[in-house]
Length: 208
Length: 208
DNA sequence: ATATCCATTTTTGTATACATTTTTAACTAA
DNA sequence: TTAGTTAAAAATGTATACAAAAATGGATAT
Image (cartoon, rainbow over all chains, first blue to last red):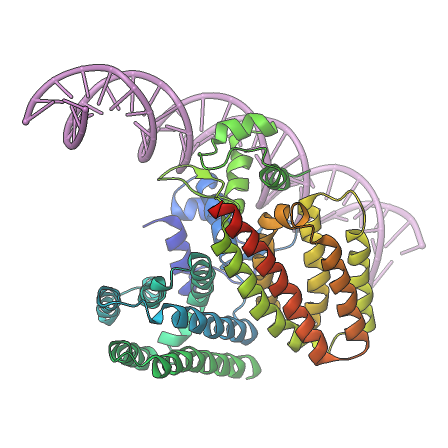
């Protein structure tokens, strides 16, 4: 597995210390490579929001907080609905078929959290791609990748997996029924509901 | 000046070849450093949209196109208006004062294109910061940084600078008058108008 | 007791050298 | 001619070594 992926997994599974600077030398020995590829990975992870600067030198794993979750899901709802609306008339059978494949993979038992996040994005983006708006899609992809950091809660304490899959199935059904309005409403709810649930849980964690 | 900044200037001023892969060795000699800091810079520029992958290895300067411009300004309009509305009630005199300072710097004659882009963002973000939504702000910052790549057109053939500054002044005035609705409408028009103008120009360039 | 400064140590940043991958182009066969 | 194949080249990826910068900790002065 590639180093970026490994670090992401380790962050999600709390195998790396939070709040204190991650030392390049430590990561270098941990993953068995020199500091150069580690530096490359750190920079990529920084630009994806998985790491933030710690003082003038060094990076650390940022705390997860409800404010960030709220913003990410707010933006996802706005931009993904926009994109989905643009795509809707252009979604053909082969797009739906592709989306179904990812749904099937998501149903497998043993898929890592990071892979789950990626598969979820693959499903959604299969429905957005027909819009043919690469820039909008790229930004939305960035939001989804950032949201992956919060996936540990969704699939852990919140147990949102089954419900989420149900909504995915329903969305496919509405697309095949060519019911644009219903599909749009469902998509918005799908995203907003996940956001509200996650945000609420994080608020409770923070207060108590 | 730092290497990332230098490369951005050179891209904006067409001092680097477009469409063909930028070789690390070439950049290394051009900027008088080894390939390591060049690689760091390239990765940062990739994540900001200034460069894209070329095949399996190498990066290149992407062509500017009206579709990307349209998407960037569409997202800017949506998200910045959202952010501005959240901020409005919390914007105090000191925030307005800060914004004014950046406006003054923008009026200077000799400011590089990249610096102009940064100053424009400083002005806008000074008005968004009171919303206290760091994640939303960070994403919007990314959109603005990507839009900087199109600044050569705005300040060159389109001559949009003076009009843009006028609108900035008006926006400040409306904030001081505490006229939220008018300010929101103006901000949306400020962004959408710039987008429409730029997009239209790029379309003409592409067709003729 | 606390703040400030300086030397030490640690950590990051960069250059050079080497390994691996990718591209290029020449060559062969259909 | 053209497609496919392979060997040479050029480019990227990585390791090691060194330089510069930042953090640490202790001594001194207030």
